Length: 231
Image (cartoon, rainbow, N blue to C red):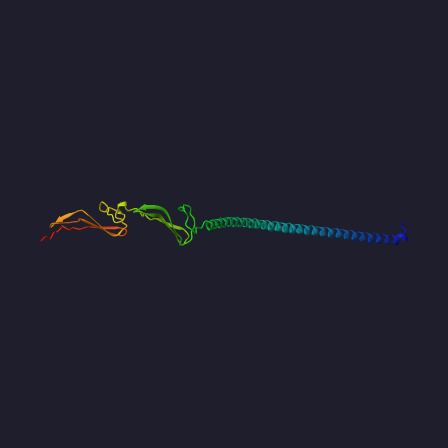
């Protein structure tokens, strides 16, 4: 037969077991919740770390890009500066050459007439007049070349051609033939020379008459017997 005296103890045991089971279930659920929260936190941390890494990478890329652009700008600046320095060097060289040439010109400036004709491009003092060479004709010695220093500091020279007329034009002597065909230079003013003869009306007249004005002859045909008016 069943002992009903043990029934309350059994009931109390079952109730306590149920309570313990409930507490165990609650504890397990809390543990699972804690693990879930920790995993979520870990995931969030991982996402944050990736974001930070991406930010770091983007900042590093930006820095690298800026450094590249800076290096490019620096290279361009260095190229420009090198070009400018080369141009400055060329200018300085040209200026130095110009100064040297000027110094040479200043050193070679002629203030007095040299003994010989200046073949080299010497500079001279403006207004300086010099004569070079000699030509003898009509018993006189004359310069062959005259040079005058222009305002720019250079000699302007020309041949005098002092003895270009033939020697028989010297003094009061008339040339043997009429000074025609370009040989009409003379040196004696008021010199009159006649050539040829024409006879008419019992008189003899020259056919050609040449007068000297001091540098050139002017000749003409007299035509003395072209239309004779004899009495």
